[in-house]
Image (tube, one colour):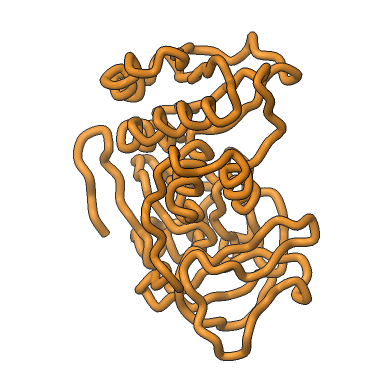
Length: 289
């Protein structure tokens, strides 16, 4: 575990012992018995055609039922080898050498493609709650250059004219980070509310999705971690592999949760022993009964 300083202060926990990847039809998985699993390996698809990738390398340990933020699912259990070995390393691609069709293929591959045309306004939402949700603050301060470049490239590919980057007016850390660089991007504007934007004329992405787009386009890579804020009287911000066990994470951080109330995204959960963190998880609140 490595701790950062100041506003970027967070703990990394990217070496869970097991990963629990949701699937809905085992016949749609393309797995070989006893075969090694690689980081970013395509494991199969879901019934809706969404591709399934592994966020770690390791070996298949079995199948079990798991609970996620908004659903229950069968999950493929991968025992982590802590190497994150890939089948091949993809060099960073220059956007100038890629065709629009290549970009769309990458976005579709990683489930990031949405209905867009030249008349669509891009709206990127950044959320902020200093007590329970600091995910976007960490991403903004750490990755503002990649995010602005990804937005600019995205707009150029689809001939979009304007992007509104919605940041809470109280989130001065994020605003200050973007102001270092945003003057180089004349079509990207920081605003403090998204209420005036209409669904029919806009396409909405989160900050984390924009970072995932950058990884997908430039590195053919699934953004395989997320950031959650844990509040048990004290605030702990953690960068964690997606599909990690919340139970394992809290035990590793020595955060007591047994005989207490646990809320994920403000929703009480009772199945913490089998609850799995996906990218939709933003906050974990632990309270005394």
